[in-house]
Image 1 (cartoon, rainbow, N blue to C red):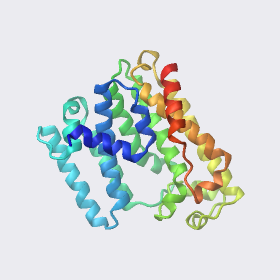
Image 2: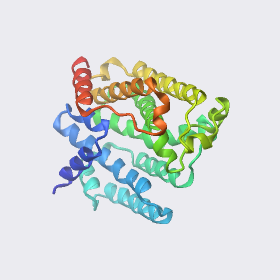
Image 3: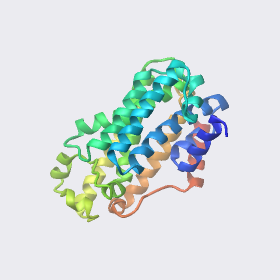
Image 4: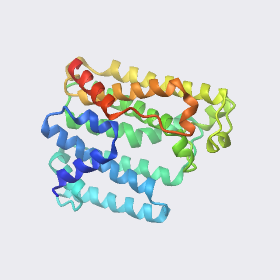
Length: 275
């Protein structure tokens, strides 16, 4: 199996909406973004699947060394070997930020306020948006503002969708200050206990995510829309996901709202054509 095949299989197996946003890219850009996505999946899986924190730290430390090897020109892992042709224009410190964000999951299972959550979102999502923007290409540096806000919006959507799943891992990403504001006890989330207050809290989270999508789209310069189409596809798919969650916000405590693969393909194709 070649490094590119490894990354393609990693992306396809995940079933993520990101995979569908890559489908209509030119082959070389699809190779690049699939390798970046596979990198993120590899290190995210460490945090989600490794139950021993010390082993997880050791694995993340290995990846820090592997990123250094990537930039020195002799990567070992299939993912970094696939990334190697594209790494020259990507700032190494952004890969360090992603690893820092993943390591936060080993230390922090609650966030006191939105400001502290923003740092996490920046590291695990906005930075990926910035790297993606570099891979896709841009003329106007305002596109980086778009990429930052889009990454934040996508991560906030993930947090909303995964409230119940995260709670089963004893993680609550909704800021504690906002739980208090809406009179929702953290134990209610951990015990999958829905209420009118919980639903109001989630509607607030949904509206904030939508605001960041609007900010992102407003920031994207017209001359860069063509190159950044994959991000627009992601925004469309995830916005449709928010619409589904909004119909029954309480259900996210016990299940995981998702779109069918066929609907994702349809949204991706429609958005790509519209551009």
